[in-house]
Image (tube, rainbow, N blue to C red; front, side, top):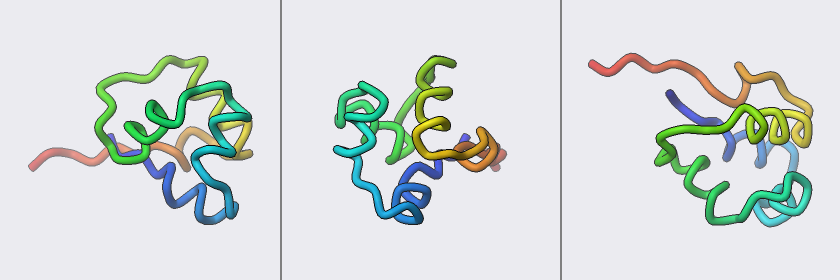
Length: 67
């Protein structure tokens, strides 16, 4: 899976710190997502990020086959 959090934040001129306050998730955990180091994500986290960024799940995450 590829996370496009950085691109979405850039598009909305928002920082990780601002998103962190909106979704009540630490900047460190958001940074892990942004840098594609997360192994899992709760649906509640996914929902909160999508709501805060006004985006669909497919805009935030995409499947990239290993190869």
